[in-house]
Length: 452
Image (cartoon, rainbow, N blue to C red; front, side):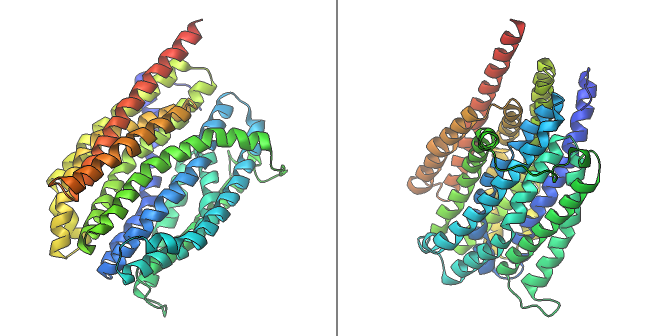
C-alpha cells in the first residue's frame, strides 16, 4: 500500500479504503434488512419468528466469522513488511478453521435449537418460524465462513472495491430469491419467514463462487496462489490465527449478543413489542454500517503502517477514523430524530407496532455517538494486534454493566421495555470510553519504545 505523507493524502487513502467497505457492508446488511422488511409484509407472526431466529443467528455467525477476521491484520502486516510468501499458508489455515467452525455450528443448531426456543415464551407459530428459519440459514454456513476468509484476505490487500463488487452482485439475487420463496412465486410454495432463510443461504453459495473465481484469476490475488500447494493444518499457524482472531470474534460476539439478549428478553412482552423492537434495531443496524466500515478500514490502514514500522502514521489513521465516524454520528442521530415516523411506516402499517417503533427510534438516536467512537477505536486496536484487552473491556461494558442495567430499568422502573435500550446506551458509552483510553495508552507505549 502506498505511503502517505500529509493529512489530506491520508484522508483520501482512507476514503478509498472505507467507501467500498461501506458499500459492501450495506449490501451484506441488506440481506437481513430485506428479510425483515419483506417478511413484515407477509405476516406479523412470521416477522416475530424471523426476529427471534436472527437474534440467535447473528451473534453466532458474526462472532465466529469474527475469529476469521484475524486474517486481516496478519496479512496486512505481512504485506506491509513485504513478506508475501507467508500469506498463502495463513489464508489456507483460515480455510481449515472456517470449515471446522461451520460444522460445529451446524451440529449445535441441530442439537440445541429446540431446547433454546422451548425456553422462550413464544406463540407456537412464532417458534416454528424461528426454528425453520435457522434450519434454512444453516444450509449456507460453509460458504458464509469460507467467504469470510476470502474477504479478509481481499481487504487486507487494500482491494476493498473487489469485496464491494462481489457483494453488490449478490444483493439483488437475494432480493429476487426472497420474493420467490417468501411469497411463493414461480411455482414455489409461500414459505414466509422460512423462505427468507432459504434465500439468504442460497445467496451465500453464489457469493462464495464469485469470490473464488475472482481471487483465482485476477491480480493482485492470483500471484499469491492461495489455492495452490496446499499445506497441511499447522498447529503453529492456526494458533497464531486464533490468538489474534479469537479475541476479535469474542469481542464481536459480546457486542452482538447483548442486542440478541435484549431481543430475547423482549419476548416477555407482546408480539407487537418484539416486532417494533426488531424494526428499530434493523434500521439502527443499517446506520451502524458507517462506523463499522470505518473500523474495518482502520484495521487495514493501521495494520499496514505498523507492518512498515510507520508508527506515527498509524496513530494518525487511528484518530482520523474516529473523527470521521463521530462526524457521521450526528447525521445518523438527526435522521432518527427527524424522520422517525416516515421510516417506521416503511416497515409496517400496524398502528400499534408503528407507535412503539417511533418510541424505540428515540433511544436509538442516543447511542449513535458512542457507537461512532467505540467501533473505529476497536478497528484501530485490531490493526495493532491488540485484541485481548479489548475483549475483556467489551465483556465488562456490555454484559457486566450494560445488560444488568437494562434489566433493572425494564423490570423495576416505569421505563419498562425501553429500559433495555437505556442499558444498551450505558454499555456502549462505557465501552467507548474504556477503549479510547486503551488506544491512547498503547500509542504512548509504542512511541516511547520507538524512541528508545
